[in-house]
Structure formats: C-alpha cells, structure tokens
Amino acid sequence: MFQLPYELLLGLRYTRAKRRNGFISFISFSSMIGIALGVTALIVVLSIMNGFQKELRDRILDMTPHMTLAEQGERLSNWQTLYGQVQSLPLVTGAAPNVSGQGMLSLGGRVKGVMVKGILPTFEPEVASLSEKMIAGEMSSLKQRDYNMIIGMELANALGVSIGDKVTLVAPQGSVSPLGMMPRLKRFTISGLFEVGMHEYDSGLAFIHMSDAQRVFKLGDQVSALQLQLDDMFLVNRVRQSIGLTVPKTLYVRDWTQQHANFFRAIEMEKRMMFIVLALIIMVAAFNIVSTMVMVVTDKQKDIAVLRTIGASPNSISMIFMIQGLVIGVVGALLGIAGGVTLSWNIDVIIPFIEGLFGFEFFPPDVYYISKIPSDLHWEDVYTVAGVAFGLTLLATLYPARRAAKTRPVEALRYE
Image 1: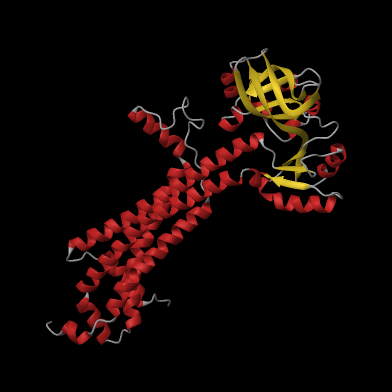
Image 2 (image 1 turned 30 degrees about the vertical axis):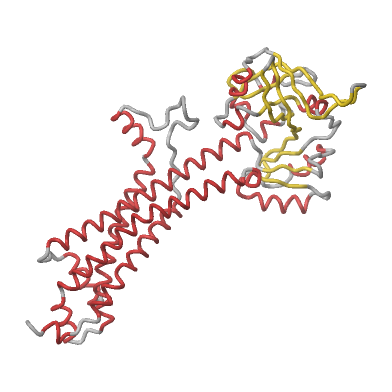
C-alpha cells in the first residue's frame, strides 16, 4: 500500500494543529491573507493594464495600418502592380494606397498644423475603419476633383468649422512665381467629421481624395505608400519575409510596432514597474512566514529532539518545516489567484456597482476618452504571479527550516 512520506504528514499535521500559542496562528493566518491580497491585487492590476493597452492599441490601429510599403524617399510608383502581388499573400487581408504629407489648415485668423492623408474611399475600408468613426457626413463624399475634406472633431472645434464650411490647405511644396517661392494654397470643403477617441488623430488628421492629394503635394502618379492589413497583427515579421520573397524590387517596410514604438514601450515599462511595486506586497507577506516559522521551530524544540533521537535526519527535519511554510504560501496564492481571476473577469460589473454605491465615476466620459475600466486577463500573467508567490514563500522557509535542522537533541531535552 502506498504511504506518504512522514515529512509530508508531519508538516501537514503541524499546519492543521491548534498550537498552544495563539499568536503564532494569528501570524500564519495574516501571512496567508497577505499573500492572497497581494496576488489578487497583482493579477487585477495587470489585467486592467492589459485592458488599457489593448483598448489603446485597437484605437490606434483603427486608423493605422498594420504595415506600410514604400520606396526610397517615401514614394511608391506603380502601386497597382504591388497591390496585386501582396494581395496574394496568405496573411494579408487588405491593402490600400495612400498619399500623406504635412500641411496647415487656416480659416480666418485660426491656423492648425495637420497630417493630410489622401485616400481612395473604395480601398480605405480594407485597412482602416474610418467609416465607423464618422459622426457627420460620409466617407464617400471624398470624390476626385471635388476637393472635399474629412477632419477630426477636435480639429473642427479648434478651427470653428462644420459641414459645408471651407478651409484653406497650405502645403509645404511651393510654387515658383515672379516674387519667388510661394506656398501652395488650395480651398477644401469640409464634408465629414470623425471621432476616434485619440487626441493625436482627432486634432491633427485630415482626409482628402488621393488624386487631390497627388496634385497638392506634386506626386504625379506616385503615392506615398501601400498600406496592408493582416489577419494577425503579431505576425508582421512573417509577412515581412513573405514580401521579400514575393516582391522583386526593394521596399522599405514599416509595421505598427515601429510606428508607435515609444508609446508601446512606455506602456510595457509601466506594466513592469507596477509588477515590481505590487510584488513587494507579496514579499512582505511572504517574509512574515519567516517570523511565524521561527516561532514554530522554537515551540517544537521537544518534538524535533524526539524525531532526531529516533533517527530522523537533518534534511527530514528541514523538509517538515518547509512543507508547513509552503502550505501557508500555496494556500494564500491559490486564494489570491481565485480572487484575482474572478475580479478580472467581472470588473465591468464591479466598477459600475462601486460607482453607483458611492455616487462618482472613476473616468467621467466628458473628461476621459476611455470612460470604462477595461480588463484583459492573460493566463501567462497569472502563472508568473503564482510562480513569484511560490518562489518568495520557498525562500522564506529556508532559514527557519535550516535552524530546525541544526537543533541538538541533548540541549532540547536537557530540562524535560
């Protein structure tokens, strides 16, 4: 018949036993609760940060393609041929040409710098969801030689314009005149307004028809780049390799991670720092186990001496008290994982309940673009947190277990 090792049986028995010193039991319980709270807080915070990162990434990629292809000098000729070549790649779900350039919009005494993007309304839905962000007008209003323009809501408010108003686009590409180099000016009619929920786009982005942009920026038949939409945004390196094998000419390829590298690095750095800070909660609770186990070892000096007398080795004694400490840590970690996962999955219910209970909003919609607290639970984060909790608990048991192993039976039983 299979029997459990006596070290495990004694360690579990000491954990369940009611000790003469109730203060030791209280410290053990507080250590367990501390680890549970630390693990719960860490899982919930990481899930919320993942949620914000996903929300911001989705908003950025609503208006930004996964990849862009261009030639030297941000020019691309014969984009139709390249379009046919990349559309056949297995991971590419859409492609669209665009013309982009810096400019200024002016109306009366108000002037705003903008990024002007020339698009084809029939192709653009393949790579961006501009039509879903429209709050006034239609994307189909961008027609060749109509010189219509769609701008962000914040930009419209800054210029004081609405649908039907005319603004002047000032392009950096100048025209030669008898008076010297003169900036290129062109009047556009506001035909639509959009709102993404990102200040960068809502206040500094304007869309016009691609043929109009080619005339304004003097590109002729060329475009700035060909934009690609992928089936999986995280497979950009694989698509990059496929393009190198499929397309015969040299191209400059940029993906979404490069275009917004600083932004995503900042979020990742903040997530790591929050992990370190909140891991200190688990560390404090774990090291409470040190004081608990030291008192347990002192309380069990007689038992240790008896075990050593009947033949228990120092390693066995160490294992008994390590098991006892690990039980406290593992139970606390399991409780924390259960609490953290439950809260992360139900954050959309819990936060509105708290807001209704206390009568305030964490993120008022008239102040913040993201008015709800998102949550995106990653199981790899849960495993990492559980591993950290287990590792810190194991470290906390080493000193008391070693001290127990060094107990001398003669000295422990001298006055018994």
